[in-house]
Amino acid sequence: MTYDFDEIIPRSGTNSLTYDGWKSYLFPHEQNLQLPYRDDELIRLWVADMAFSSPPPVLNAVRARLDQKILGYTQIYDQQYGKVLQRWFLEHYGWDIDTDELVSAPGIVTALYRLVPLLAAQDEQVLITTPSYAPFKKAGDQCGRWVVLSALKENDGRYEMDFADLRQKLEDSASRIRVFILCHPHNPTGRVWTKDELIQLGRLCLENGVWIISDEIHADLLREGAQHIPMASLFPDSDRIITCTAASKSFNLAGNMLSHVFIKNQQLRTEWKRLYNDYHSPLSVVASQAAYEYGAEWLRQLNQYIDSNLHFLQHFLAEALPLARYYVPEATYLAWVDLSAYLPKRKGTDRWTVFFAKEAGVLIEGGEVFVANGEGYIRINVACPQEMLHTGLMRMAEALNR
Image (cartoon, rainbow, N blue to C red):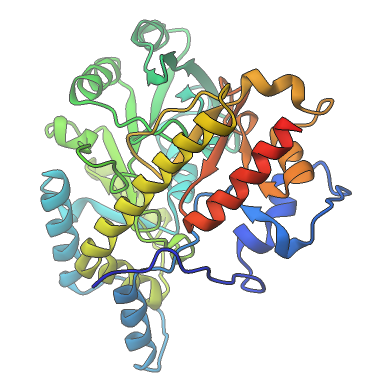
């Protein structure tokens, strides 16, 4: 079956964060912001959910579950769910998971907020690399744990970990770092960390008594030829690596609110279950299972379409905004674009987010959202029909070239 990723799907009035909740999220300090565009004229290329239909096999499974008529209290009791996950992880990543280690959460951000205070005492710290997905820092902030930053090094468009800096911070007893949060593949730069990088990082953390939380939510969204290696698979004897995954990014199920957290350490897993014995939406359970059981072909075609959009963006920028620096990411559907050369064009102190909303009617996220080390950058979500992407890019280029 061929899936249609060019379909324009109306989202107004669906209580969508992307469509209906953008103003309070993107402009919390500019509540009186007036745009010369109607709401239905805005091009939304910001938050990381897709403008595509969720996979038809998933929607069919949800409809079939609704036909069972009762939506009662639900947890995952059927062993088939775990078998489906085992098959997916083994076939796609070569990782033979142990479903006895599996707990669940309403989302990976929720899982991070729960894990950090379980792993780090009040006087201990969390280490992240920057630029960073903002909730990594918030996971420490919200429970009073200090968050230490290590800037990634950009080398001709390719971001790399600064292992000398990481070693200095991890080996400094005064810093009391207890948790490292890894984004793998990385958001927003799109790096797929190599086996050598992961082993070097893992040894550094584990030898210094530091837990690793590996957020692998973008693992399926790879460029052709790229391979994701789960961090935990490289250290099978360690119980200090926690893996967080979900079907939400891969299959456009962000509202599904069901993520998988693999906790090998039995004491920590027991404490998690004591504190967080979540029920789930019955629709979320069948949706996640159907995605992993029947969604492989949809995902294959999705990645091909995203590949096309990312290369389309590359060619567009080369012609319309030649001073922009952009390299096709190894994973995700998020483009990390350096517009530093165009900073003088930006009006006053407006953030890129404000500038493009006002001048182009395009919603994107500026580099300042990503904790640190992102000045001059924007992040563009290309998981949308190419017609929509083209319209947004045309408006952005016109705004900068005016």
